[in-house]
Image (tube, rainbow, N blue to C red; front, side, top):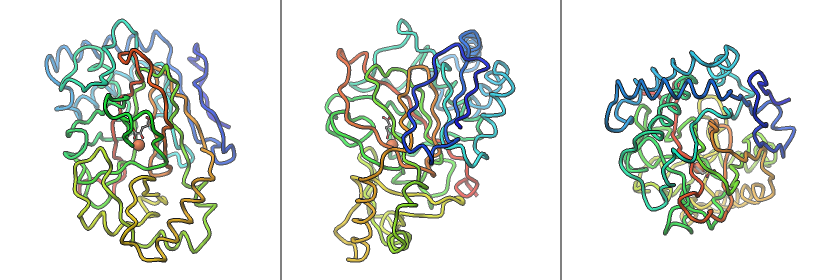
Length: 356
Ligand SMILES: O=C(O)CCC(=O)C(=O)O
Ligand SMILES: [Fe+2]
């Protein structure tokens, strides 16, 4: 049974499709926030920002802002919601969390979707939404992380159909399917050790999505259950080479990227380090190549575990150590100033990846 908090539910249920029903049992938690609570949160966050960060980006003081805004949010959410957010990381069965109706996405206030590049700093409603995104992640125990070689070092990434990148296999593409992958960095994350390169959480603020382009999730346990033993054994060897994601500017030539395990024990879970487009196959041993091929044919047969047809105003947090994700090709809405727009922030939480 999915857990749905109906306490404040004056909105239609978020659009979540359960495909691999068995694997998804209890995996997605959905909270819904009443308009009045959302409005009070945004009113207070705007006042907080006006006083504490009168100008400039919220990124410079994100830790402080995340802590402070998490308290503002906590003041206005029912106890049940607060406990769900706080306990989510410890809930082994919970893989994705949706908070409906938490961002301010009124069309008159949102700027145009930044399909041609974004300003270095936002003002107004985007700043407030970013602060709320940070506050929610802090309530969940996360610290937002960024890396110099990805997204210009910015903590918030605009996931938009960018002009000129239509065919790019990245979060800013659109015409092509961005296949199953887990996000990883080509270089060190702030607040985390180099060894892992894996942000624990992907967090999204959904600002626009009239295209209804879905975020599809494939739970690792669903994939691993389908793999023959020899394939998983081989994928657990540090024999694979993972290219640098298109959106990163790091070099592939680091020991970390050249001696990768596709299946890895990461903070007590079997993590799948994989990018359909990013695997480098030239240097692999015949055995590794064969195992990778077998893995990819299993992947190609999988239905998503869950399809999230995210709606504007939603917060979506996914435990990316526990799943792969993808976004299929879609047609951006014209004019592009109203096209799909998510703000994404990576979060770290796992002790092993924190700075020692
Ligand atoms: O656009 C989406 O739904 C997800 C894109 C993606 O893979 C990411 O932002 O990491
Ligand atoms: Fe991704």
